[in-house]
Length: 365
Image (cartoon, rainbow, N blue to C red; front, side, top):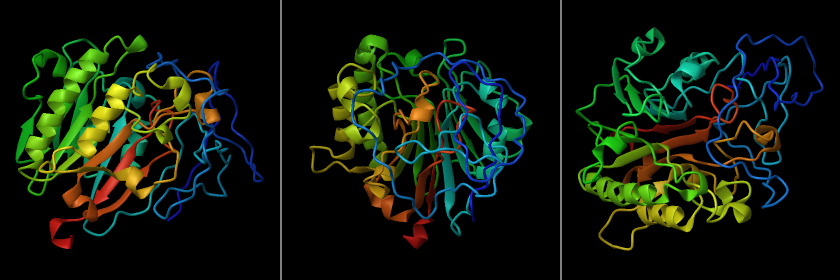
């Protein structure tokens, strides 16, 4: 099935520009919600330095732009769309037979994203499990669109008001639920950052990992998190396979951000300490420890697609972004993965794009 995308012209924000025109034009619809300016989460890179992204190849399960859309979007040099508002009509290819579909999305405030089309993506994706990060909720929401679709909902809420927040919503009842990071000396700081659900075949961990902060002022807190999280995920992996997803707040390699040279060891998410800690989880020095796989990168080794585009400096239109949202799986179940894609068209309800994975039942591995 083709991805049907009808972009609308909305009230422009100061930093927004019109999308590129295509050969087929028609009357565009108007999107009612006005976009609020977002606070900067990390210093936006200049497009004048660093490596220029390489235009990517298309893959089979990717959503596509319909040539008959009212206003076809432009594409950045790396091949990702440049739309700045959520599509009016959204559809995706049907899931693989008997597969479980898991989606992860940093929504940069549930309240804000709900005003910008959040529910339309959820309805179109229709995941079995939905991981939400940076929810910024102060109480467990009673949104009918979520409660009717997901009977089992687990929200980890920060002690700080309208800050952080992680949730896992599921159509299937888990065997157990945990919202802690064992061993961490400051349990309060962990609230709003992690939820773990245990299912029969695997654990699902959703995380909104600590950000190293402007000027790397909270890099030590990030190191502390990484230390205890590695021990935690390895302990779970010894019991059954793990699916770890969410906003991991790290660009693992130079291929995972637009301007690696100018950001190296200067910007949160791309320091030696952070990238080394992530690489150690994937490939531990201890031969007895299980390996993990960054699934999207394994399936798309040459693509430079991103999940985060700052609202500032026209980063979306220029394709200046970071790949911060991922699925990391125990190596032993990677052969069960049917697909893993960044939903690059789903931008505007948040400054992040969702990422989705399908995994087959154990009997089919």
